[in-house]
Length: 177
Image 1 (cartoon, rainbow, N blue to C red):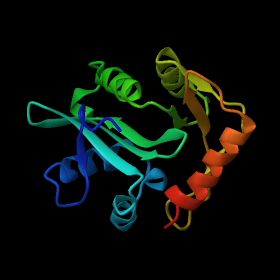
Image 2 (image 1 turned 180 degrees about the vertical axis):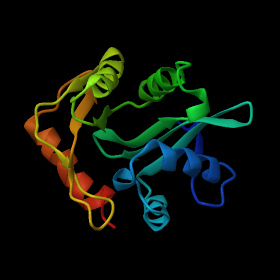
Image 3 (image 1 turned 60 degrees about the horizontal axis):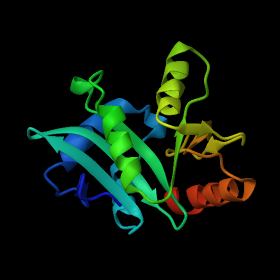
């Protein structure tokens, strides 16, 4: 994992945890967020990495990911809202991907409007490919249903077997709480 390019946050006592949490909670809908107890569960798994880019004493970008045998799954990533539109997301995601020696996977909302189309094009320009598999992400919170997402993978499309492995890891490891 690219810890030399990023600061790894390993627990809630880390100086950068609160700035991460502040960005995280405004960057994702509530049904796509871990609560703090779920975040602690993730920290206790050696495969989970919460990496932050810090510049000028400001958390600019974070990526929360899972390092599996054959791939790295990006569960969440976001740019500090005060710094959006400055190409930080592209630079940091590219930096992250170049230091990972595995396939990188992430999920995005289905393409239903100009905003989701723009988001897809952002990832496509960075080399991410859309996978053809129907995919639903399990709910993080009670009272919510799994939500449909698209699975993207860097520089390749996944085989059916690779997708099934990801789906299994997502349900039984990432979302084990």
